[in-house]
Image 1 (tube, rainbow, N blue to C red):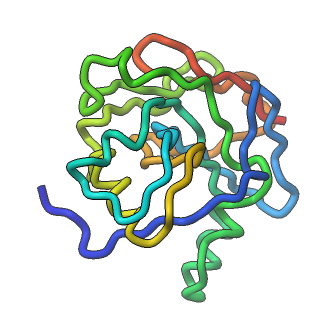
Image 2 (image 1 turned 30 degrees about the vertical axis):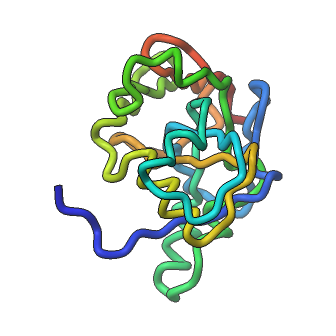
Length: 186
Protein backbone atom coordinates (compact mmCIF):
# COMPACT_ATOMS: atom_id res chain seq x y z
CA UNK A 1 0.00 0.00 0.00
CA UNK A 2 1.26 3.47 -0.84
CA UNK A 3 1.13 5.78 2.19
CA UNK A 4 0.91 9.57 2.07
CA UNK A 5 4.26 11.33 2.34
CA UNK A 6 3.29 13.35 5.36
CA UNK A 7 0.71 12.52 7.96
CA UNK A 8 -1.16 15.04 10.02
CA UNK A 9 -3.43 15.11 13.02
CA UNK A 10 -5.27 17.77 14.93
CA UNK A 11 -6.40 18.17 18.51
CA UNK A 12 -9.86 18.63 19.90
CA UNK A 13 -10.43 20.01 23.40
CA UNK A 14 -12.75 18.21 25.78
CA UNK A 15 -15.46 20.82 25.05
CA UNK A 16 -15.82 19.11 21.67
CA UNK A 17 -17.14 15.89 23.18
CA UNK A 18 -20.87 15.34 22.93
CA UNK A 19 -21.92 12.44 25.14
CA UNK A 20 -24.94 10.46 26.25
CA UNK A 21 -27.01 10.96 23.12
CA UNK A 22 -27.30 14.72 23.54
CA UNK A 23 -28.53 16.59 20.45
CA UNK A 24 -26.02 18.32 18.19
CA UNK A 25 -26.98 21.93 17.43
CA UNK A 26 -25.80 23.27 14.10
CA UNK A 27 -23.44 26.20 14.77
CA UNK A 28 -24.36 29.63 13.43
CA UNK A 29 -20.88 30.24 11.94
CA UNK A 30 -21.13 27.56 9.23
CA UNK A 31 -23.59 26.61 6.52
CA UNK A 32 -21.86 23.33 5.60
CA UNK A 33 -21.35 20.86 8.49
CA UNK A 34 -20.30 17.36 7.40
CA UNK A 35 -20.37 14.08 9.33
CA UNK A 36 -17.40 11.71 9.44
CA UNK A 37 -17.90 8.48 11.41
CA UNK A 38 -14.69 7.11 12.89
CA UNK A 39 -13.51 4.34 15.15
CA UNK A 40 -12.29 5.86 18.42
CA UNK A 41 -9.57 4.39 20.63
CA UNK A 42 -9.51 5.12 24.36
CA UNK A 43 -5.96 5.27 25.69
CA UNK A 44 -5.58 3.13 28.84
CA UNK A 45 -2.13 4.18 30.09
CA UNK A 46 0.33 7.03 29.70
CA UNK A 47 2.96 6.79 26.99
CA UNK A 48 5.48 8.76 24.94
CA UNK A 49 7.42 7.52 21.89
CA UNK A 50 5.47 4.28 21.95
CA UNK A 51 6.88 1.59 19.71
CA UNK A 52 4.40 0.22 17.17
CA UNK A 53 5.05 -3.31 18.47
CA UNK A 54 3.82 -2.26 21.96
CA UNK A 55 1.05 0.14 20.90
CA UNK A 56 -1.74 -2.44 21.15
CA UNK A 57 -1.21 -2.40 24.91
CA UNK A 58 -2.10 1.29 25.08
CA UNK A 59 -5.81 0.93 24.29
CA UNK A 60 -8.42 -1.47 25.60
CA UNK A 61 -11.68 0.09 24.44
CA UNK A 62 -13.10 1.16 21.09
CA UNK A 63 -16.15 3.26 20.21
CA UNK A 64 -17.57 5.01 17.20
CA UNK A 65 -17.67 8.78 17.11
CA UNK A 66 -18.47 11.56 14.70
CA UNK A 67 -15.88 14.11 13.66
CA UNK A 68 -18.01 17.03 12.50
CA UNK A 69 -16.26 19.41 10.11
CA UNK A 70 -17.34 22.88 9.01
CA UNK A 71 -16.36 22.44 5.35
CA UNK A 72 -16.83 26.10 4.42
CA UNK A 73 -14.53 27.21 7.26
CA UNK A 74 -12.07 24.42 6.44
CA UNK A 75 -11.88 25.58 2.83
CA UNK A 76 -11.17 29.17 3.92
CA UNK A 77 -8.37 27.90 6.18
CA UNK A 78 -6.89 25.73 3.42
CA UNK A 79 -6.86 28.63 0.96
CA UNK A 80 -4.91 30.76 3.44
CA UNK A 81 -2.61 27.94 4.59
CA UNK A 82 -4.03 28.16 8.10
CA UNK A 83 -4.64 25.38 10.64
CA UNK A 84 -8.06 23.76 10.57
CA UNK A 85 -8.93 23.85 14.27
CA UNK A 86 -11.82 26.30 13.94
CA UNK A 87 -13.34 23.98 11.30
CA UNK A 88 -12.74 20.78 13.26
CA UNK A 89 -12.48 21.63 16.98
CA UNK A 90 -15.59 23.67 17.70
CA UNK A 91 -17.83 22.93 20.69
CA UNK A 92 -19.71 19.60 20.47
CA UNK A 93 -18.02 18.65 17.18
CA UNK A 94 -17.10 15.19 18.49
CA UNK A 95 -20.12 13.08 19.47
CA UNK A 96 -18.90 9.89 21.10
CA UNK A 97 -20.70 6.61 21.58
CA UNK A 98 -20.52 3.82 24.10
CA UNK A 99 -17.15 2.07 24.38
CA UNK A 100 -16.73 -1.67 24.08
CA UNK A 101 -13.75 -3.77 25.07
CA UNK A 102 -11.44 -4.72 22.21
CA UNK A 103 -11.50 -8.22 23.72
CA UNK A 104 -15.10 -8.47 22.42
CA UNK A 105 -13.74 -8.28 18.87
CA UNK A 106 -12.12 -11.17 17.08
CA UNK A 107 -9.72 -8.97 15.11
CA UNK A 108 -9.20 -5.22 15.58
CA UNK A 109 -7.77 -5.15 12.05
CA UNK A 110 -11.16 -6.18 10.66
CA UNK A 111 -13.88 -4.12 12.38
CA UNK A 112 -17.01 -3.26 10.41
CA UNK A 113 -18.59 0.05 11.36
CA UNK A 114 -21.26 2.28 9.83
CA UNK A 115 -23.41 5.37 10.23
CA UNK A 116 -27.11 5.64 9.49
CA UNK A 117 -28.98 8.90 9.20
CA UNK A 118 -32.76 8.69 9.51
CA UNK A 119 -32.47 4.92 9.03
CA UNK A 120 -30.42 5.10 5.82
CA UNK A 121 -26.79 3.89 5.71
CA UNK A 122 -24.59 6.86 4.78
CA UNK A 123 -21.13 5.60 5.69
CA UNK A 124 -19.87 2.06 5.82
CA UNK A 125 -16.29 1.13 6.62
CA UNK A 126 -13.90 -1.48 7.93
CA UNK A 127 -10.70 -0.99 9.91
CA UNK A 128 -8.82 -3.14 7.36
CA UNK A 129 -9.32 -0.32 4.83
CA UNK A 130 -7.66 2.33 7.00
CA UNK A 131 -4.42 3.80 5.68
CA UNK A 132 -2.73 3.17 9.03
CA UNK A 133 -3.34 0.52 11.69
CA UNK A 134 -4.32 1.53 15.20
CA UNK A 135 -0.79 0.67 16.30
CA UNK A 136 0.81 2.89 13.64
CA UNK A 137 -1.50 5.76 14.62
CA UNK A 138 -0.69 5.46 18.34
CA UNK A 139 3.06 5.19 17.66
CA UNK A 140 3.01 8.21 15.34
CA UNK A 141 0.96 10.51 17.57
CA UNK A 142 3.01 9.56 20.65
CA UNK A 143 6.17 10.81 18.92
CA UNK A 144 4.81 14.34 19.23
CA UNK A 145 2.37 14.22 22.15
CA UNK A 146 2.46 12.30 25.40
CA UNK A 147 -0.68 10.18 25.45
CA UNK A 148 -2.51 10.10 28.76
CA UNK A 149 -4.95 7.58 30.18
CA UNK A 150 -8.42 8.56 28.98
CA UNK A 151 -7.26 10.37 25.82
CA UNK A 152 -9.30 9.57 22.74
CA UNK A 153 -7.94 9.04 19.25
CA UNK A 154 -10.41 9.39 16.39
CA UNK A 155 -8.79 7.28 13.68
CA UNK A 156 -10.15 8.34 10.29
CA UNK A 157 -13.38 8.12 8.38
CA UNK A 158 -15.09 5.78 5.95
CA UNK A 159 -16.37 6.70 2.49
CA UNK A 160 -19.69 8.54 2.31
CA UNK A 161 -18.94 11.76 4.20
CA UNK A 162 -21.70 14.31 3.70
CA UNK A 163 -23.62 17.25 5.06
CA UNK A 164 -26.04 17.13 7.98
CA UNK A 165 -29.12 19.31 8.36
CA UNK A 166 -31.50 20.28 11.13
CA UNK A 167 -33.93 17.73 9.69
CA UNK A 168 -31.68 14.78 10.51
CA UNK A 169 -33.64 13.28 13.35
CA UNK A 170 -31.45 10.27 14.08
CA UNK A 171 -27.75 9.66 13.53
CA UNK A 172 -26.74 6.18 14.68
CA UNK A 173 -23.27 4.69 14.74
CA UNK A 174 -22.56 0.97 14.84
CA UNK A 175 -19.70 -1.45 15.26
CA UNK A 176 -20.92 -4.57 13.50
CA UNK A 177 -24.61 -4.73 14.30
CA UNK A 178 -24.21 -3.18 17.77
CA UNK A 179 -25.56 0.37 18.01
CA UNK A 180 -23.18 2.42 20.15
CA UNK A 181 -24.12 6.00 19.23
CA UNK A 182 -27.46 7.73 18.71
CA UNK A 183 -28.35 11.43 18.60
CA UNK A 184 -30.18 14.00 16.52
CA UNK A 185 -29.23 17.23 14.75
CA UNK A 186 -31.09 20.46 15.52
